[in-house]
Length: 361
Image 1 (cartoon, rainbow, N blue to C red):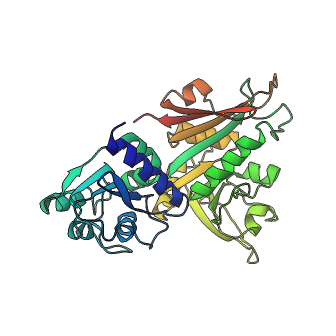
Image 2 (tube, rainbow, N blue to C red):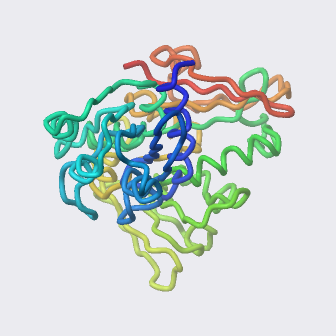
């Protein structure tokens, strides 16, 4: 392993310390090295806080001359919540900057690199570029497309059912798998389910099983209004987006703990809703990432219209024999669902196997 790869891996470790807290900003870590020794480290903690390279520079005061900065994202060159970082990097004596990813933000997009080179600093890009992209895939996808990055999560029996013949899906996956799902809830901006899931399971959709002080937005896809709002999601704070049709007639009670906002979209002739329109509206509100936890019909609709960027599938060791298929009445088979996806990783838990697929391209 060469030095650039070694230190970039440390950069990624630092960047992940901000996971779940930096949105809408990306996760960024920085390491400053001089004479083969780490002299400064830093990471971006949250929006509006100091950027990673500034924290690393402050940590390395007195050791910056002729040093090398490792950072996973190109230093910025524009004013936002904080001043630009590239000029600071150029002023403190750093001789070389090693970067994983170019920042696709139109306000940056190579301009930070050009600035550093114009000041005589050697710049190397593309170190562990694929790993860097995966780290900030929510940010990259949203800024390039305007759409949130959607993760579809499913828990399946060994023979491919999401529930038994009575519709009971409790405990298909084990405790370790459920904890991992809660970890993802703490990383994304929003968690999405269909109305049927709310009525049947009454979930909070919060990351209860892991430490996470954030309350992700909750999204409910519901063509028709709820008869009542006596469900956990409406009484646990945060914001709830309800995706519904333009001719629906909702009356939202004023005494809910959660803030509720309707997103009204067109209805297709087959009765489905324009989820692409809904996701674009959510993206315009700053929602960069969504974990969709079902139900089966909603997952099928998202897949059918190409709106899922990642699939996280938990296979348990249970065999049900018969039960509920993953995509309800939508004509999508598991084979077709993953045809446009590539295997990214496989993790083994105590009784389950998690398989992660990423959309091709």
